[in-house]
Length: 198
Image 1 (cartoon, rainbow, N blue to C red):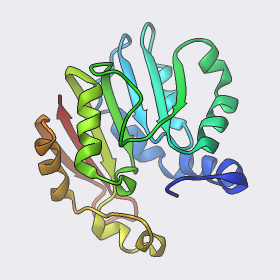
Image 2: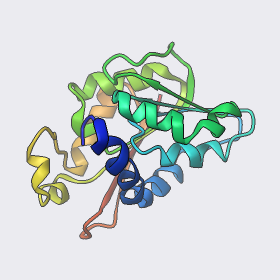
Image 3: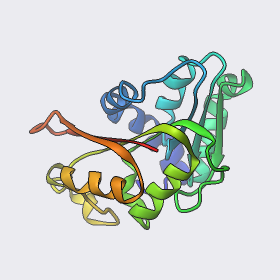
């Protein structure tokens, strides 16, 4: 789950991620206040479903996906070759610890269900703030600790968060106007959405 590879990553996990995450993708995209000219970054794009949805809303803007799984990058290049060819979508290999972009590059940054795997949460959020333009918006989407603890595989390599733990880290990283919403509470797939302005 952290870094998909091989047959499992390309054949099984990519479409599964798109199906499992569609609801939280829609919720996340409803909060990024997207404009057709925006330059948007998704960190850890996995199956790539969100990238395509964003690309369809852009006219002069571009959505870039960065993932540290070479397999996911190759699969995205293959599956989304038409979107890449029209110039509205880009994908590349990269790591949240040191994002491969200049400072103040993006209007919007979002990431869905990746924060559990970051080596250093504060550093990762600091990198997001660095690559955002002043006044740019970040949205971090995750599932709550209380929900994720019910799934056995999250005991291995996941750092879980209760909803209230995340906003203070965004503030520590320098974000302002930090907001938290917790949707679908009590369901199998709850949605914790934390946003902040650079």
